[in-house]
Amino acid sequence: MRFVLTGDSDCPIARIALSQGESVRTESGSMVYSRGVEISGGLNSRKKGLGGVLGAIGRSITSGESMFVTTATGTASGAEIAVAPSIPGKIVELAVDGAHQYRLNTGAFLACDEGVDYTMVSQGISKALFGNTGGLFVMEVHGEGSLLVSAFGDVLPLDVVPAEPLVVDNEHVVAWDSDLEYHIEVASGMFGFTTGEGLVNTFTGSGRVYVQTRSLANLAQAMHPYLPTASN
Image (cartoon, rainbow, N blue to C red; front, top):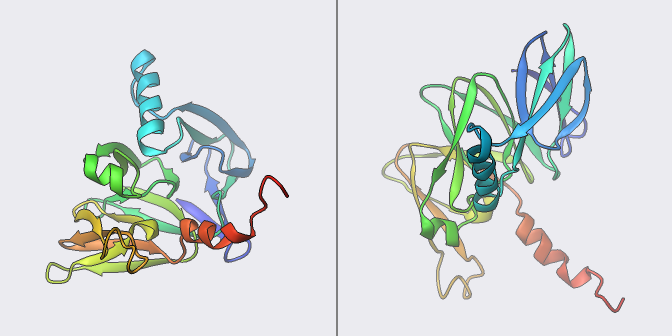
């Protein structure tokens, strides 16, 4: 994927260059502008007919992903589409290949090129109920190409080795190597009441986890005393 990031470092846009006939898939509603590009939308499912409709609805309900996916195709040389996430923060490119395939937290996906595909994989009922990693299903990308993800705040890569499990607050997980094992547990005390930490993901094995430096949940909690009430 040929792209450049422009704009403020905390609120960037990704300007993706397309040759004639070249396509990228983007998060629905993320387009800022385009030149020489044909935009088409479709259900977020590989199946056709009623099965595709039900599959797209199921993904939307169980994982928080959009029911639709947008495909941008260059109609002339020098085509361009600019995309941006819905929240402020960083945009990061992840290289997808035989050795690096990822699972993504809800809302992390921004765009991918034609060589990258994805499936929705079950992560078990306990993780769906107690974690912030996409509900019953999470997006797993595979193939070979470029993937753009976005996050609230900066994005930091953290390596996991067998002898040193990594514990990450659920709200800060962006993406992780699909080979990593993980489970969700209470940080300490009764659901974290004594420490204020709540639920965490513990990653084990060998691989990399990408975390965001800020949490939307913490921001919302910090702003709560200042939000107007119905009587104001």
